[in-house]
Image 1 (cartoon, rainbow, N blue to C red):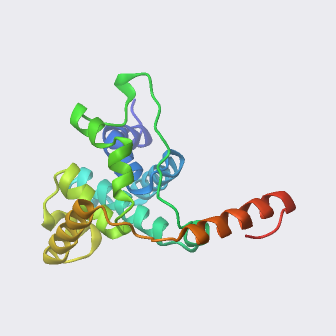
Image 2 (cartoon, rainbow, N blue to C red):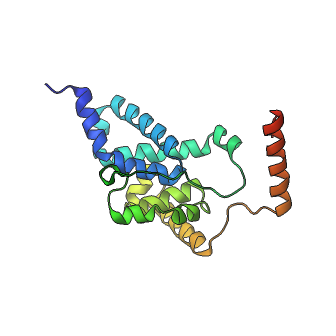
Length: 194
């Protein structure tokens, strides 16, 4: 006899690769992506069934919003450094368990693509990924992000322009980089604050 917990788990597991791909592309961290998926599962389990019209859209919305909240959180702001955003590589040897649905998605998650995404704000990154990589339309994205379709369209076009220009979110001088590196090394050696 199948329990309701098993039904919830099976339904969630169906979309796990998609959800992981979204979270990983937004956060660049496999461990943080797993944490986001765990939180999304818990929220899904406690949601009233009448709220869920499309499970795929519902779970995508939860994961996207959790990623945006994480990126805006005070902890991330404190830990953020001014260098490039470099994602953790996802290493897998089993093609059946890869967190990507197709070869095209696997290609789109290349390190070069992720490094390009560092030029975008979290909201621009979310809209760009949901539209360009996961092929959601602007209306669906607007519902997920509580924005208007026109606003999402504008964010997407701005993101495309920034990626084409290879714009950097942070411009730092060599002196600033050396100063911060020195402070970091001193803090590591002495156990103090940066």
